[in-house]
Length: 66
Image 1 (cartoon, rainbow, N blue to C red):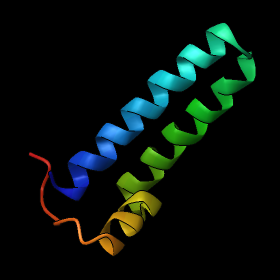
Image 2 (image 1 turned 30 degrees about the horizontal axis):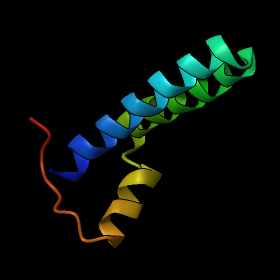
Image 3 (image 1 turned 120 degrees about the vertical axis):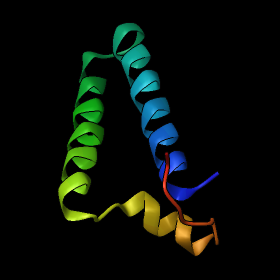
C-alpha cells in the first residue's frame, strides 16, 4: 500500500470508530471527527499531513492513491 491509501484508510477508520463511540459513549467524540475532517481538508490545500510524515519514517513507499 502507498502512503496516500494508508492515510485515507486510517482517516476512515478513525471516523467510523469515533462515530460509534459518540453513539455509545459520549457525544464529545464528534469533536474528533471534526478534527480528522479539518486535517484532511487542510492537507488537500497545503500538502502537510502529519500521518504521511510518520509513515515516511517507517519507510512506507510513496505514490499516488489512484
